[in-house]
Length: 311
Ligand code: A2R
Image 1 (cartoon, helix red, strand yellow):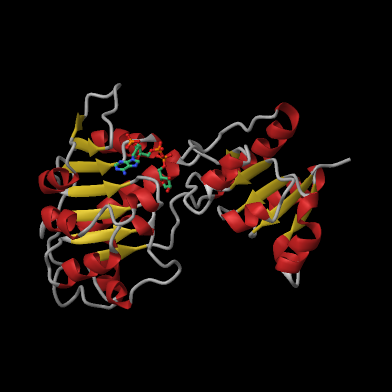
Image 2 (cartoon, rainbow, N blue to C red):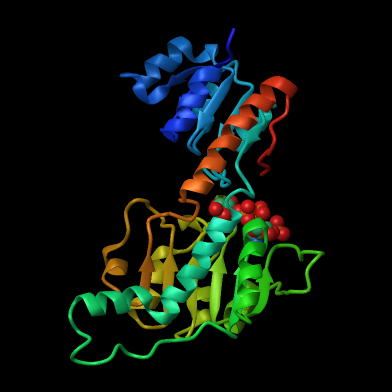
């Protein structure tokens, strides 16, 4: 008998196929009345494959649930406490996306400082024959502050070293195996650096970590790059700082109310905006999909997922 797995949200087509072949898999999205379906069939499922979401209500509606496997490294939309209370491990997909998120981070830094997107818009608008594009800012040799020197943060740092950047970081605890300087005060890090890259987990503990005070410290010559979660930055404060030219620029892969992006940000030329594409390459999404599958299979074979998310 195949294990019964509920799928929440759409996964990649090949992963859905793989799950369908190995497990007795049902997609909640296919049900006309998902609530009624869960009430009638919820107790049949021992596994949950999810696109990153599992709140307490969903977990409670699956009384026989033994394992959750989530697509992505961030688990801020999963109620880890509710899962832990029932001894349910939550699998996620760390490490396999480090390189792609870090590559994009460097791309965003270059774009916001050098104005790659803005210069392209300038050329396409036919403005070049009238005047050269205005001078921008360099990134080589500048100061980089990393908020969250974890798996992805380290990958960003390795790349930034190749740009001769001077790097410091802010975590709650200093990292033991690095020569990079730990800055216990986030505001001081923002004051010191030219570029502030944010790559901490989302959730209540980091909500609006990047607030008015941090943006003020970063200042009119400073650039903010957020590749973490939209919730980590106080978006209203960011819009105000940019509007009043109290911040040099921002490059954002994530937003507070995705897929909504404030119209004011869209109108600004010193802001780079991309639609949450940090891990969005064919290669990395395939590796993430494989991990979602492997976490489930490993659990059913050994009682343990390969990569377990912790709070
Ligand atoms: O604070 P520590 O010592 O636990 O270091 C972690 C840091 N961090 C924080 N730093 C400052 N204030 C906080 N409240 C805070 N909370 C966590 O963020 C650690 O160095 C880093 C996270 O690293 P990892 O757990 O290795 O996560 P990874 O794989 O780099 O991904 C980061 C996030 C995901 O959760 C997604 O939301 C996004 O990137 O894609």
